[in-house]
Length: 178
Image 1 (cartoon, rainbow, N blue to C red):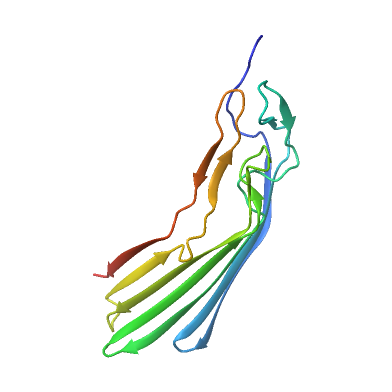
Image 2: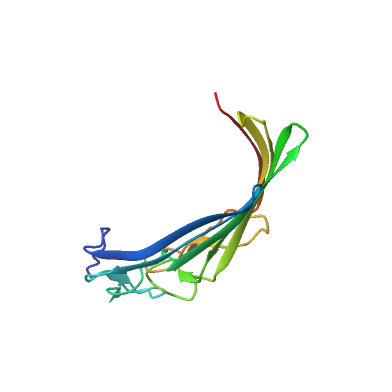
């Protein structure tokens, strides 16, 4: 039996969509921002994808389907609030990023589907009056949402894998301008 496999780039891909971004100052010290994108990214020529979870090398043509690990939409919403604290400037920032459910691999199996999720980041900080420095406590993935950045199913030549998304973590950030 002869097995032929290889790696390569898709011969033709079409990526099209729209993006938007807006920021509005509700008050002098409170602003809201919204952004998002719609992205249709498809294979426009024959692109063979190995059929997952079978012990033989079988292939399907992915032409016309959304490319794996490319969500069709993203929406981001956040706010920034500045408040004087003595002679310093206090700052609270919250950002949220939503992604709809999408496939993380071209094989499009149940295992490679990532349900929709929202990631939230929170920052609380203090800055110099002239903005020459600031220090902040940053909490990423504030609600400890579990999600995957990549998944692949087993095939005749590889095991099932999952790359998990970043768990909740906190850090202190110091910035200075000079």
